[in-house]
Length: 371
Image 1 (cartoon, rainbow, N blue to C red):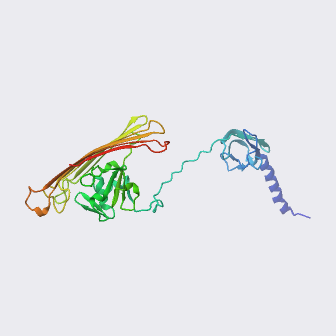
Image 2 (cartoon, helix red, strand yellow):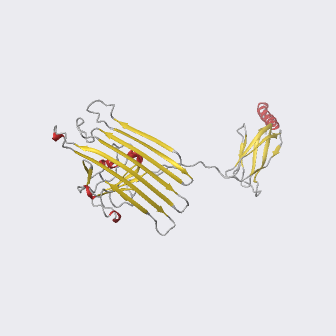
Image 3 (cartoon, rainbow, N blue to C red):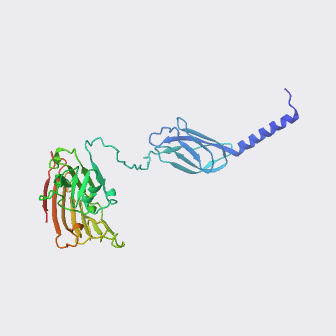
């Protein structure tokens, strides 16, 4: 086979460039091993820092990086489940193979935490009857100042002055509970103690179909779950008023409350809540009427003690006073023949729980004193 002189020139230049390139580069090879067992680590990543060169170890931990320009390099080796290793000043010489082994130590793989927001299911499979619950975050946005006023927006509830009727029943057929303890006025059968809305963590309303544990109730059950003391010191103040509004929009309403979470050290936590609500007309129409003012004051405190991991003591106390006048517009200018009411109530509850005992040990005391 004959080649012309013009065809030999490109072949000669290609061969010469390959020789020159081989004289300017080297190779890096070695093995990535487990520092404890000495076994090869397949799939380990070997990267030459500052270049696009690198390699992955084979099934026995061997790797090879070709065509590395002459010089000194930093080599980084990484493997899932092992601590990364970096080696500096690795010398690569021209037309030579540099041998470098790496031994990696096992380490825990740091995995960032995953935050999942719980969502309330649309339908609860455990509830066999109607049940409506209002949580603390929703309570803050509902109108009203006392816990009982949250019932106005529940289905099947009608309000007449200071009492509530559920599904057409009498006011005395509703059972009012605070932390599972009945607080029904023994004379009227109505709510016996008014607390500020800042006390509640949740208000549960059951208009029917409730279990036998609520045997006294005939038409509805309202259970108010009070706030639990926090682990850290915390204080909050709330205030709402309409006194700055113009006439026909100002009924002298003002609501204030202070809540303090006070850890008592160790395994003891306390919370205190003071509330006061005043208004010139508690049942407003077009404009304020005389002798319809109202003032509600409440004081609540709770103590939670966990002396051991098996015992939990909860004690709570509340004092409330509500005073208001009943004046009707039909009475015209007869301002002396109106009814004035004053209600007082107090609550004292103690509960001792022992999860490891055959049954919970509990003791409660409830006292209501209507005016």
